Image 1 (cartoon, one colour):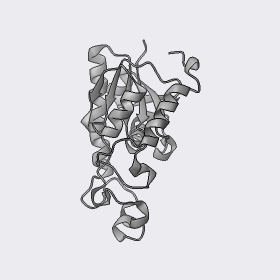
Image 2: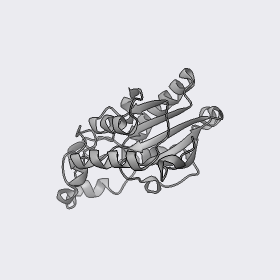
Image 3: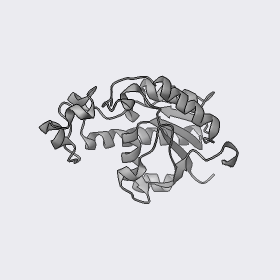
Image 4: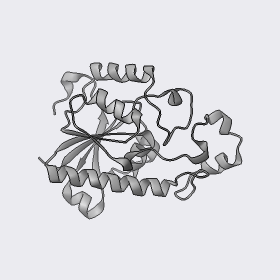
Length: 211
């Protein structure tokens, strides 16, 4: 097979997501609505037939991995956890809008972390380390197709930084239980730390996914 396919999927909804609360490193489980939504998507759509699943250590990601990839080995990858939002953790966006510290943070920048939180630069660096571990593990274990269940911010920035063609992070935004599939060739990754973006997942209908 030419390369290694990796499917990045966003975890299901939590009550924090539903209420507009920042829950980066905070370990919220899936809400009842979030679990039902994932189960419905699994029934109605076709997800890739992966050989192994790598997951963020947070409960919402692990629960999502179990729903979307039943009977598959799940390997925890600590580097794929969501950003640490510092003092904004657990707070709703509407309560933060007038804070100067929040206004400063949402201006963006690699070295502009939320107070007591993680910078975008650090998040990208650790995510790269995690992705490299995943790819090396796939090569070592002769795994040609894997899933990565992680978080929206991780998916958007990982694909924007390392994917081809180049696109802005928000162009990779995806709904819960949805994401993107990429193809990693040893040459592209080892020489340029890049991979090819193949498209969105899941497929529209279970019998339409040919892999």
